[in-house]
Image (cartoon, rainbow, N blue to C red; front, side):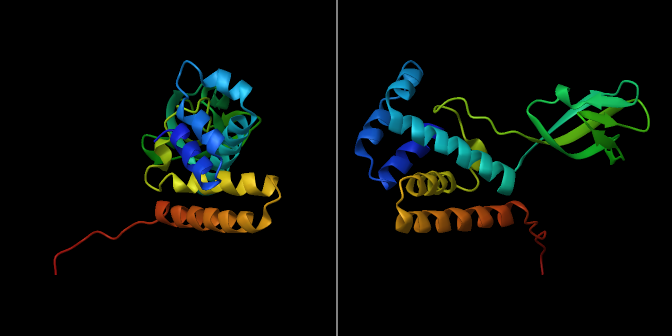
Length: 187
């Protein structure tokens, strides 16, 4: 599912027919023009970015890993794509100690290290794939967009509904993401 589809779902939930019509026509050739010309589409797009970042930072972080060679017992985090925070550092598949300060990972010795880190979620286009949400459904993002939209419009009753659904679904997704199911066995 891509962001355009989630925005269409959000516009439908919010009963924004003209926005929905504009979103239906978006393709790679006219996306930027529609974003410039249609304030409502631009607003929903920006709210989607805010909601997506919130989901990824608070509930479902995007974990990446990159293997790098240290130089002078250090690795610069600037060599990690969209770096936010270190999760762990491993050498030879074993967790190793490190110190982090001002974009520099200090290590005990030189060598090849695998750095697991949280990535900054970046959305550049409405046609972008949101595969990270596949396991949890696009409705999480849709409810976040609707919650932010309704509070911004002063629709407090609607906000309360959308916000409660958004938080509930985010919390459920977080629990599912952190859940380790026991292995099945024969009795």
